[in-house]
Image (tube, rainbow, N blue to C red):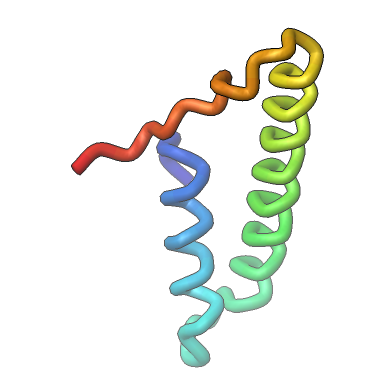
Length: 65
């Protein structure tokens, strides 16, 4: 899968999992589980960093528009 924002990849995988006719449904579910786990780890790391340095504003919204 091409490199892109993790949240975009999770959205795409959710769409694939919802599609009942996808012949690679099980593979998509496993990819979604891995991506979800990776996202959780990133949030844990961000939270730990914010608490460790005492700056909750470390969380930067990257959405535009």
